[in-house]
Structures are given as C-alpha cells and as structure tokens.
Length: 110
Image (cartoon, rainbow, N blue to C red; front, side):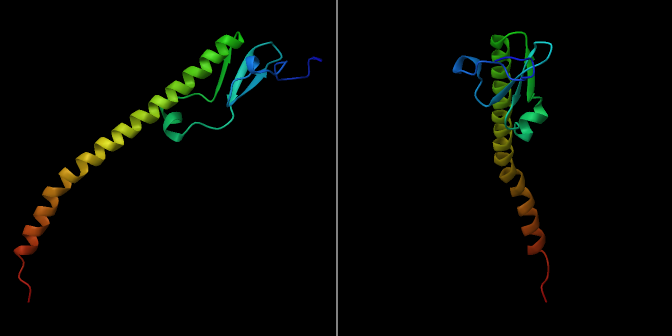
C-alpha cells in the first residue's frame, strides 16, 4: 500500500527493477536510480555517474544503461592505454640499459 512515505517505486517486479541499481521515487514523483556498488576509479574519473534520474522507468533504464556502457568503455580504453604503455616501456628501456652497460664497460675496476 502506498501511503506516501515510501521512497521506493511499487510494485517490485522484474519490470520495475534495474539489476545493480536501487530505485528511488522522490516526493515530487521523480524516479532516481543509485548504483549499488560504486563504479571503478577509472570510470568515475572519466565521468560515470552513480546516481541518475528520469521522467519514466524507461528513461531511467536507458540512463543507467548509458552509464554502464560509458563506464565499461572507459575501463576498456584505460586497459588499452596501459597495454600500449607496457609495450613501449621495454623499447624505451633498452637504450637506457645499453648506455648503462657501456658506462660500466668503460669503468676501470681496481
């Protein structure tokens, strides 16, 4: 029974839920969703929003999907950048290693 004190939409069914998100109905009748678990630091830094709102359940569902996609793409991009940096690191480390070896070869050890 709705007595106006509930902040969660009713009834709760698969059609009125968004997995991983907690739904909230404001006193003004606006729908909000807050992600149950925070996004990763990478996704948060990229701009993924943990709490979103919508005029309808369909709009809210679309917005949570958009945030999940955005977060996933940010994490994938970060992994690609990390892999690229790791591939570049051995190539840039090789000249430094050669320089150290040359310097050590030129040293006189007594």
